[in-house]
Image (cartoon, rainbow over all chains, first blue to last red; front, side, top):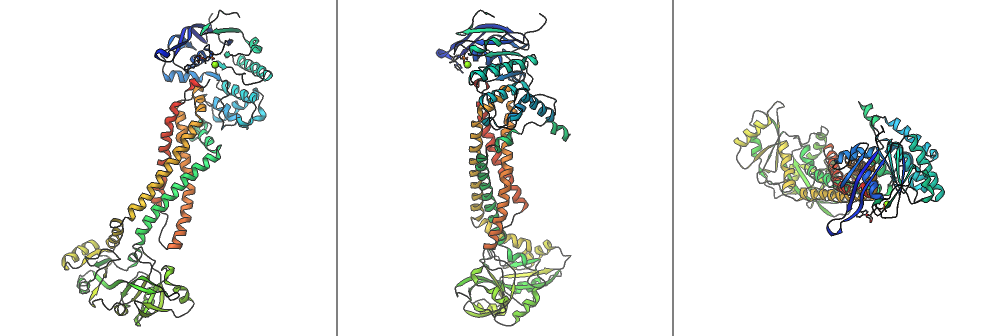
Length: 229
Length: 390
Ligand SMILES: Nc1ncnc2c1ncn2[C@@H]1O[C@H](COP(=O)(O)OP(=O)(O)O)[C@@H](O)[C@H]1O
Ligand SMILES: [Mg+2]
């Protein structure tokens, strides 16, 4: 075990609300994600999956427990640390969250623009290559408005990977797609992530895509169930 | 160095946010443009009116001017003894003097016979009055009694005198109820106090206005040797002459007139207020546009933060939107103002002109307007929470 874990969590708990409204949504979660591993997380709605994802994605402050990503402890971390860490984590959302005023190519370049030390031309070329990789070479100049749901999600994948992350977080990326398209998207995501040796943590409800996982985690009421994978 | 920055550039997000929403951009630009035009017009009118108050003053061939201390402005000139001007002649540096009578008389429009107040200047036709070298020959025509020179730039309400005169017609009309004939045209321009001007000999002037005491004049023009020190002479003359006369340099004479309109009337205040209103209206419009723009794109801004973009970068996007709006709104405002100035010049004959100082001032005001609004709209960005977008 020379390789360090990409994500290391132990005893992570989280609460929402204050005073009498305070409610625990994560109860002492412990788990690891190894480099290049594809982990799927399932569980009923409202059990805290998204909350866990936002904590790992350095979008929320850690309240209790230990959580480190790429070896950086997130509890008590500064705003700046979290912002820099977010650059190294790719995120794909349930809604595609593309920038409406940018073309497909420009949206992807918003990802590669985060890379330091590359010229504009290089970043642009890379953005094009990523669009080719997700099979949208013909749709470069189209605005999100003119793309189908599946195409938008492909652009979102290209954008997330364009920043060359070593961890990809995806929250129900297929929920807005029909089953065939959903399957394609997930396969594509896994293929591209593995080419980059990028770990993936994906939340999904879709039982038809569970087989892409190296490991399957089940969550219920803020707790991880003993793993089956 | 420039190549380096060029290579480091990113997607021009501010530009795309603005241009990919043409309707919103149009409204914003229309608002800024409107505010800009309003400011240009109000400030232009203000400066134009002050400038217009001295159209005639500027043309006098004089280094030093004598007026009565009771004179408040060109529309209320008092007389002083003509002797003072002759006394001034005693100063070794004085090379020439011109006594001038100055008053408003009723001019009858020779076409529709309506009357209107016109500024009449009376002087000895042999004396120098205006800087214009071609003026002397025209002035000579005034040696005949009952002749006047008509200002061709006078407002049209005085009748089609210049056109008739150029057609070779004999233009005769009444001034102060007495018959006069136009013997030539001069180019002076209406001022704020006077819609038109006529020049005539002192002899004719006194005939038209018999109440004028013969030894009294309203303005005394004094010309000095070219190497003379104006300020010293003005000081010396003020000391040596009695207190019933006030000695000014030509520049002070012009300022004296402008100052009257500036301080004794609300013109400056009214037009500055108009410009300020344009500024406020512009602020409100730009703020509304930028605020709703930021609000509409809040999830997208949150997404960018989730991707690892700094808040500072996003604030920069809003700031850049402000700068772009300022530039894009200013240019058409500048162009329209030029056109409107020309229109105003033609219809009112007021010297309303674009000057660099005002062009810069309005740009700075528009920039303030846009950046101030951008700054307030930025506060909305604090609501972009990347944790809420999953
Ligand atoms: N910002 C929030 N404030 C308060 N409660 C929240 C917030 N976000 C989620 N919750 C609650 O926390 C629980 C877990 O939510 P979430 O992590 O979104 O679950 P999942 O993604 O598994 O559906 C839910 O009961 C939800 O209502
Ligand atoms: Mg969820």
